[in-house]
Length: 202
Image 1: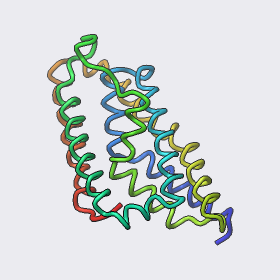
Image 2 (image 1 turned 60 degrees about the horizontal axis):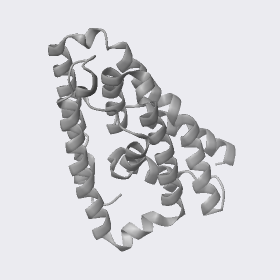
Image 3 (image 1 turned 90 degrees about the vertical axis):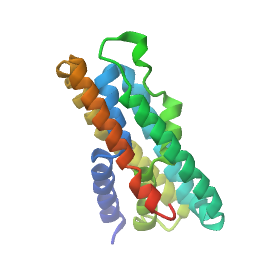
Image 4 (image 1 turned 45 degrees about the vertical axis):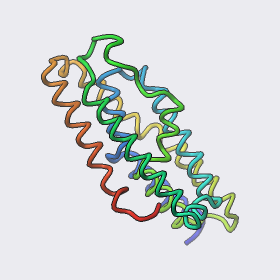
């Protein structure tokens, strides 16, 4: 396959995987509902930048570290599972829209960037992209190219979820509806843990 054809396939792969449901998008949807679009921007930027850094590092050989030291990946998996359960609890206990500081705070840029390392879908996307799409013969250039493609495609793709959440704010001003919505989002986030817990390696 030519470099241009490979790049086109990578663009499609990155778009489909960025826009479909996963832990990041579920949390962005909930953040859009609870905090609005503007306050969720740092969260979105953190996802994009964090995922780019993760892709570049894994592409140049970090995945080999986990293969050589599986205990490191096991520790990451356990920490990730615990963190996602905590995030699910935070979403489930979010207060009504318009309740001010008692509703908590949206995820920060650094928190969102760090979350990519414990996100099972992010690992699947990175490992698949790095192992499947070979655009150049240089490992470093290939990793940076893939990271750049995701950096371009990811932000507009995930912003759709925040916009959808923001659009739902009026309907979810009813405390009962909001509690039901946040409970469903928390449950969905817990369910998204299953692939990571069943997978033996990144």
